[in-house]
Length: 297
Image (cartoon, rainbow, N blue to C red; front, side):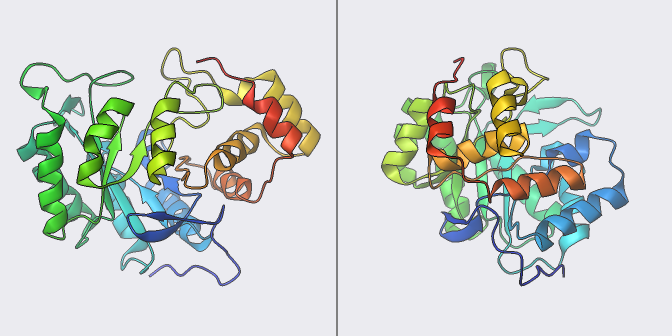
C-alpha cells in the first residue's frame, strides 16, 4: 500500500464527494494512457500523487490501460482513496472510441471498471452524455433518455457497486432533470476563459453539488477551447506573483466555488507538484476581480 506522509495535507483543502472527504486537488489519469510516459514512470507518478495528499483519482475503462496502472501502483488501496470512473463510451479492439449509452452497456462498463481496478466499489461513476461536442455524439440507438440511464446507475448504487452518481457534459436542464436521482458531482468543460457552462455551475452551487471542471487550462486538441495559460493577462499576473500561469488558472477555479474539485492530468512529476502547489495559492482580491473579467465564452 502507498502511504501518504503525515506532513502532506490535503492539497487545496477538503470538500465532499459522494459523502466522502477528498482533497480539492485530485488527479486525472487519462494522460497516462495518451502520453508515452512509460509504465514505470506512470506507476511512480501515481504513487507520488498519493504521497502528496491526493486521494481523488479520475479514470475510465475506455481510456485504455489507466485502470490497470492505478491498481498496480496503489493496491491495496488506501482507505481514504476515492476512485472515480466514467461510463458512456467504449473502446473497440482497434482503439476506436464508440458511444455506449444504453443502460445495459452502462452496467457492463461499471463491471469492467470494477474488474480492471480490482475494486469492490467505485466511489463515483460519471455518466458521460454524448449530446454535444467536444468528443463523440450519440446517434440512432445510442440516443438514450437520461432517466433510463440514471435508473440503471441508481440500481447499481443501491447494490453497492458504486458510491455515487455523477454527470459529465450536461446542460442545466439535464442536471435539473437528474436531481431527484441524487447527483454527487458534475464534470463539464469549464475554465477561466470558457464559462459557457456557468448555468450548470450555478445549479451546482444552489444544490451543493461538487463541480469537477475538465479542460481547466483549456485545450490545444479541440478547436474553440482557448488555452488559459497563453493569455497575456494570466501570464502577467503569474509573473507578478512568481507562480506559473497554470497555478493562477487552477487557483481561480478553486476560489470560484468551495466545492470545486480539480482533476488536472499530467504525465510529469514536476507538473504534478506544480498542480499540488496551486492548492496553496491564494489570489489577491484585486487579481480575482481582474481575472473575472477575462472570458471568451
